[in-house]
Image (cartoon, rainbow, N blue to C red; front, side, top):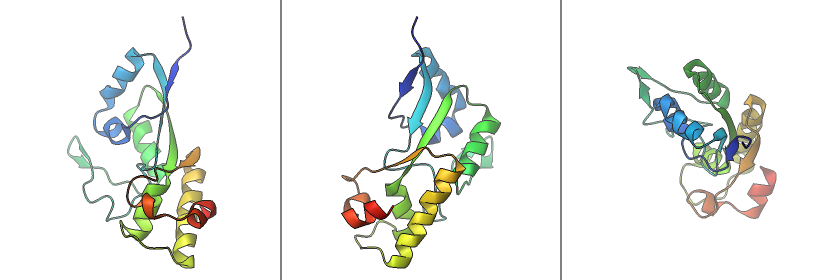
Length: 146
């Protein structure tokens, strides 16, 4: 007998919404807690980043925040614990797109507000994946601010 395992790099945030029974495969492996949001994350979203929203049972799912995303998971009834970081890649994409630019002070404040909102909504931390665009364009000063 062992305690439940934690999937520390669950790359299935969208799949949990579009195919909830897929969570059963994690349970069969002994995984009881799923952590995701490494760099990219299901929230925050904007019209541009959610240009291809998932469709479930004929319903188009458009969430903007982690509060919205977690509410969808709760309505679906996911049978495992779901924990998310807010991915700074996603935060940067929402504010700056995929451009190789330094954010203005106002854009930094907008990104900070998105991180703050995600944390208030239930995200447990922040993450980066600095080898992928647009995160690769982030400077140390930007990361420290966020």
